Length: 217
Image 1 (tube, rainbow, N blue to C red):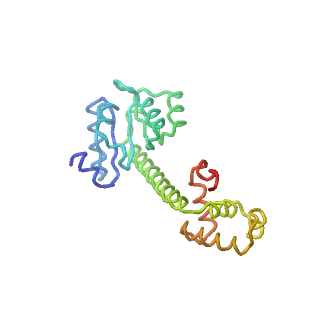
Image 2 (cartoon, rainbow, N blue to C red):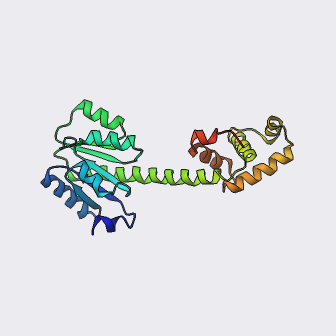
Image 3 (tube, one colour):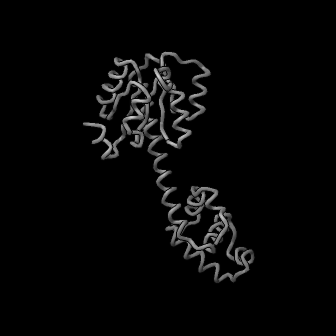
């Protein structure tokens, strides 16, 4: 199956980037032997040219390669806002390198040679991390869209509700009646598609701070 065809669905894809042909082929064969789709690349540039980074899954990156190194590629992805679950697999690892990779969000840092099961376990964790992260991002986008439908007053009421304020206190702070607060609160929660305050709090937390704090009106 071509990479272009692979982009048509959302099954996890493991991207293996290693300039050693034998290692790259071996890793892809191992993954495919347990039913995990994979694609191999000889360099980070080759990976970028393939345009597959939006697929769910994870990356297995060598550290030292021609062109952009694995660690530099990790930094570039982070700077561009691209979320990726990364496993480093290298024959040249050291403690500072490991610390740098893990602090930057790598799921695992493994050294060659690695046991098949150790690698497969790391891939399973990385895919799970990626799946959870994508779920959170999807929910956040939905919450942002719903929040955008609120009136300025409903946004004020939502902010007060998630802060734990009671209707009576909200009415006092906003200079409106408690009945009016209840009407705004009911409308706001319907628009946010939740009848539960804990859900509303999670939705509020997923909305960017600059959007939450933008002046009403």
